[in-house]
Length: 293
Length: 293
Image (cartoon, rainbow over all chains, first blue to last red; front, side, top):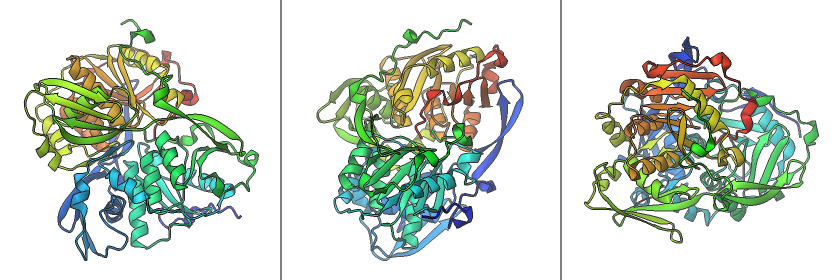
């Protein structure tokens, strides 16, 4: 399969140059000398569903409509068949209102207060787990040549992750092509923005792979499965429950992807090992990456 | 000041060898060969306050009592002057019940649903911000020689962070001495466990420093200030709002601490630059560290 790593192939790529996403600050370095850096913005965004305040997310502030839509989808407050009649974003008030044709069941959902690991305290976890019962993920072939091509492209894509650090990135991919690369201060926001984009554009999920800079926690695995995406890959590590859930629902879980190395802990059957790992160059140390720890 | 980096100086050190905290899993590597690894556990822990269910946290499962106590403290659901009459942990039910002499005001708190960046969705953020109004942080002198000594000790302390990765560490420090080193899947849990330990043992906060492996987000800055700790240091990066809040409340904020390098973006006035950065050895590349991204 042809390696496709033209950055222009992105439908949405990060915009590290956007002024609004970072702020210039001055401090002192270890010698006491003044030092200028650009640090990531965090802005509150309050999400409403039909006039009911649901949550205030801290976000870098790009794609507020996709974030709101994806958050409500991933929380099960908005169903695939709910008709969204409008999404109103007010930059000054820092609010997004998602309007649906019919009322939703969010109030019951909010009664369950669950705090998940990593970056999703407040996720309605009980519901997410229940939601998995109906999920079956398709047998999409997953070529290791595509995996390596994706990692190579994503790792050299100009991003806030590379330029400012302290941020998470999540990329929706198809074959060897990264389609939508979202970044945010919270991993959950980056994933929710992708879910919102997919919902808005009615994008097929069964032939996609989700790549994340973050850990493969139970929450990431569950969200990926709920989105209908059969494969999740990361350069970072695993948690035991993330692995357990991936194995139960048949999601292909690949972690510690660096250079030629990777580990597959679930859904091995989807892998088509058509690439020679020995032919893949190792990453330069750290590859200029600043992890969002 | 004497450099103090004897690991035995910890009151609580990580226990990477504890079976309960990691699980052995087998997968395949990039060549298709089987590979065994140990991955971090995530366990649900449901926290009750006087018989009222508050939240279910995902945690590695050590120090459940400190986690419950610290969570309730940092959420403002438990005040410094509330008398804790008992903390009952049931390992089988995975629950902790914190009992107080008088009723608390948690229900009002829970009405405010706020989702913060990084790892604290669900944090009652409005209250945390309000809580800052009363906070004044003492003028503790902060020696750069102590900072370097702490980093050297913490970076070579055997931990899950070093052995399994995909985890966050937070260390309560005094002078050049790391006192309590907590780790967890979520940064907020590690901080809450320290807050719980401090509350339980009535530990003075004004002469302490908090070191974290994680990002210096608004949430980390606010929690540190609410705990009464005047300084927060990290090997990771900053967010703009974290810097802004630290400057407003006069908290010393130090980030990007690696080898001889660090950046101070707030509370510079506490720094006593008594160490020669040039004399500090640089870290070996990655220093075997696995970031919990």
